[in-house]
Image (cartoon, rainbow, N blue to C red):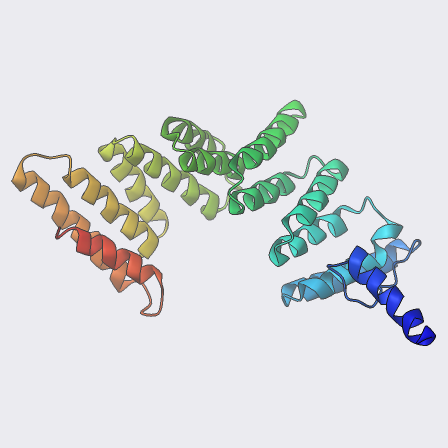
Length: 278
């Protein structure tokens, strides 16, 4: 029995104090060369890419004590914990990464996106605003994505006018280096904000622009159909109402045609189309 407890008690200790780790301890180095840390980081990246998040974290744990201010290790650890649903641990690593490299705007973006995923909108806004504040103070161009994040938050909070302001700020921040994704997002957010404010013509114009950036997107076609559906309800005249119902039906049909049969989004589009008959 004495030998059993000699074995079992350390195992209990590991489980209680390191619940996210394997019951078997990881060799956590207090000293390691930069080359060795980089090699471990590359292994961690490889495990992350294969969605082996705990194995990736073990590679990080192996060397992080040797360089607690390693931005790459902290940033990757944050994403591993996020993917694993360990949001509090992810937040600690995001915060550490920001303290090491406050100029790296991608960290603010990803941290805020995680908070949005958690529906912690005030926290997400605080993070994004801190990123804007730092960049403004250090003459670093604020990327459109951060303004897009703030626009999304305001839409979730039902603050459409504020959402529109941030969408327009995102558009103003676009430049030749901005990717199509951020450009598209800002226009879609603008359209959604204008729709929430019942500015149907402006919502339609922004969505037409979005569709020109990404043709045959069922998501955009569904949004355009929804704009026409809501617009049709604003008319008392039956002829005008029918005109916009027909437009809505046209875009919902296009969305259905461009959605895979197994895609759950197809159900959403079909419900929108069916609602036109009510």
